[in-house]
Each structure stands twice: as C-alpha cells, then as structure tokens.
Image 1 (cartoon, rainbow, N blue to C red):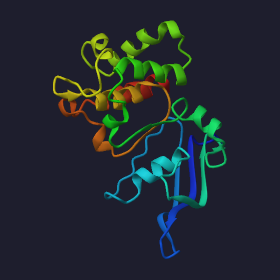
Image 2: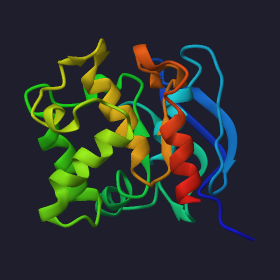
Image 3: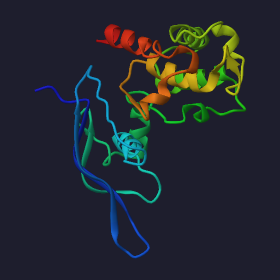
Image 4: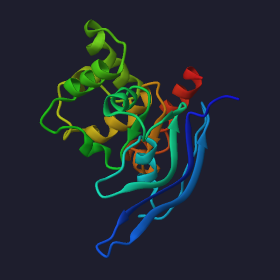
Length: 208
C-alpha cells in the first residue's frame, strides 16, 4: 500500500485557559491526502482550517499544543522531528501558501532576492542559474515582464495586481512540492479570477 503524502489521524489541538481547563480548537480530525490528490476543506472563519494546515507542517501557533493523535508527511511523524529535520522538509518537500500571502514577503527586500533565497535553500538549482530560474517561475505564473519584477519590491503592483501576494501564491504552485493553501479564495489575484488555478493544474499534470 502506498504511503499517503499527508496522513492525519485523530488529532486534537487545544490550549489551556486561565481557569486551567483544556479547551480544544480541533477535535478528532482524520485526513489523508494521496500523491497527486487535491483535497478541499470548507468551514466558517475561525473553524480551524488554518490551524489544521499549520499542524500538517508540524507547527502550531503559540499557546496551542497537540492534545492527541498524529500527523505524518510521507511516513514521517511531523511532531517527533527535530527543528533541523523540519527545516529540510518545509519549503523543500512541503509548502504552505499562507492566508495573507502578500504580507509574507519582506517589504524592504527586492522580489528577486527573496525568490533566489528560496531557490538556494530549497532547490537543487545551481547558483549560476538562480536568476534565470526565478524569471522562468514568474513567466510560468503569467506575470508580465518577469525580469523587471525581480528588481521591484513586494508592495508594488502590476496591472492592478498586488505583486507580493500574486508572486508568493503563484510561485509556490510552480515549485513541484505538495502545497497547503490557507483560505482558497485568497489564492485568486484580482484581475485573473478564473485562470489563477491554471498553473496549478499544469504543474500537477507535468509532475504526475
């Protein structure tokens, strides 16, 4: 039997209130995602979707803790790994597209520097090819004039689209690793609604 890419079994996540009582945020969640499979989780704001996505990365926000269950990525227990082991997986083998992705880029660093840093840390692309690969990724996600975008800051815009948010969302899809998207509605750029998932579908086809 093939090992699932993500295998969440009966996890509960919660926090300790001032009264000393343990209050659950997630209760007895089971979720399995196979290779090449797309799974959507629907729920109201505050229902725990983002918490579940972060737990899949082996991460919980301050104050939260794993109460029960297990989270495995490709057979590895994410809450038993060391920080060094997790750093090798996050970004290189498993990626998170955050809910407010535009704010996840450093506003004082140029876009090119940040994309190249991600390639340096999480890809096998040689240093001499980093710039060319960054331009290629921007082209794959249909942003105009990729070379010019590399020299811009994330706060800029291209034809009405916020550069930071679009780049992080789209280039996360362009790298062939499993991706977790928090709040799917936020994965759409304003002027490209309806075509934003196209690079994701193309990547899934080419990556198998």
